[in-house]
Image (tube, rainbow, N blue to C red):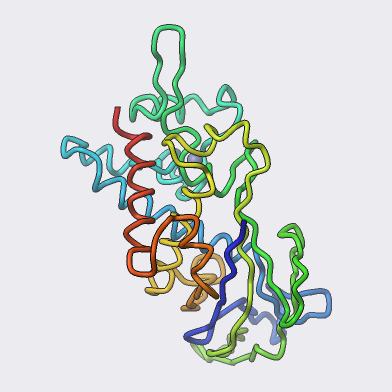
Length: 290
Ligand SMILES: [Zn+2]
């Protein structure tokens, strides 16, 4: 099952920064062996995951009863990377098998009732968390793979390939002057369209409980989360390369057509967002409400 999406730069999208050192461009980021700047599928996937985690947290906060304390909210309501442990933000903490969990993480997850002990049984209510369930974690393969597709080339490449397509012609290098020393920045010109395929696949349908806790199937849940996440990204809240490369790339993710989406979510064009939100809410209720 895949969604075909189109990516277009709304502003110059910074893909890497060349730090000036001894007057030379000493640091090359996001370039292929021919030193051509490239857009990585891992960057795209990271961007979608960041947006999805934010979205899941926000929706979870809304469905949880009011008694959730401020302290608990700060610990992370639904997504493990939002748990504040050892001062490392945004690190997935769900690890399979669960017995390998850091005891401090385990203790927090139990306190938040993500993991319940009932007599001799352990119930993994929100474990792995929805983000890890969709995007993968140590011991659990991601349901999502992204590949760029060259125009008029229908063949699909795997997401394992770090450099999918060279898009040099869409890039320009710009020189900023900061405090007297030049800073070189690679950027994507606004406007061009990149076709990429975002595929959601589940290889072992025997283990749907690892991915979903509600009655929906993993494909439906993952599709809902990713579709809503693209709307978050389109709003400009999360941008390409914002954290690691200090990028400012505001991009738009446009579904090529919404037929697949409508089919999976059993929705029409008019209630697509509504349908996706309902799936996400149901899934989070199964995970977070005891
Ligand atoms: Zn997790």
